[in-house]
Image (tube, rainbow, N blue to C red; front, side):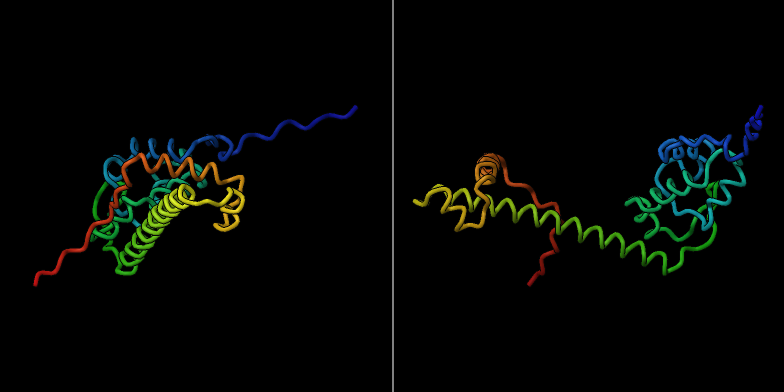
Amino acid sequence: MSSTPPPPSPTPEAIIPEAMTPAACAMQLRQLFPALFDGAPRPLKLRIQADIQERSPGVFTKQVLSAFLRRHTGSHAYLVALSKATHRFDLDGQPGDEISEEHRKAALEELGRRRANHESKVELEHQQRRNRATLLHDFQTTTLTPANFCALKGVPVEELDHLLELARKEAQEAPPQDRRPRPPQRRR
């Protein structure tokens, strides 16, 4: 007769709710440390994760806290705050160390990179829309068969109807607005 060993006693890690999401972590942090996490993002004290674990033992797993902090410190609002603030803040909302020029510069570079990516995406969307409008115009004025037209334009025959339908729909809509700020005009 074989006896099965008793189940292991729960470790502190097993008691921590593993199912906590970063969003639930954010809510919990707002409740525990409203001076820092309630309201607009503020630059966090370096190594804030250790402070959180020390002041609220067993509430957060390292993984969920890390996931939340990655998301939080990578947000647009946080990067803007980091680029404009002079100090970092602790869990009680008190100013601490000054923000290094290296960290401020990294935040500004990331914001610039994101802005450039967004502008590239918008420009690509505008270009694709112009291409579809040109395709529609050319199709409406051609005497070629659809197969020959597609061969000439480099468009797969099975995609032509969809592209033309999309171009007709876009022609009925107002053109998309360019949301980029215009550079100031030079006065002469």
